[in-house]
Image (cartoon, rainbow, N blue to C red):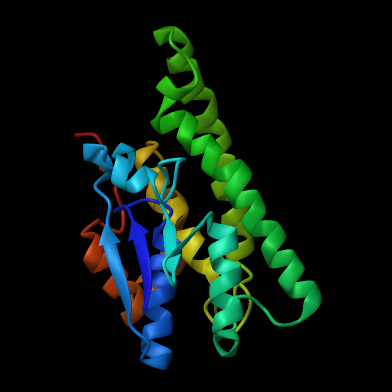
Length: 219
């Protein structure tokens, strides 16, 4: 049985929801192992033994750890090709992996600089500037994602839900934590709510016990 180590609200939601989609389609179960990131469990020796980088997700396959979302996504797609979580056609597949790489190496780091500026600067003024500037960048990234979602029919790659759709859910949720009102992206928000309403995706959200939208308007 596959085992996924995930953190509530983290990017590990992508394989978490994908595994629920796989279970719904194939009946194959998986084990979901909660890592309490807010308590620092990712830094404990037990977890570092499977991922020295202290990051989720980690997918355990026959006792062997696999890290990094793109690698995990490619493995799951290869194991369950009938679901087409990645497109089969060569060009569409390459474009999807290119977009996932951009999400992983550009969009995600922008948020990390907002949410964890202490990782990048000791000076408080520098941390404040990192948060401010990356907040601008993150909104620009959301605008780009929203533009792609506007062409969804009904999902990013057509008729079948895939990893890009799940990743897009993560980033709009993070936007709320960065102070970006999801209502400022009405099309994107509606898309995320439609994806989140799918029973397998809803099951992952329920297990993580995280709200779909984090943003709260100031009183």
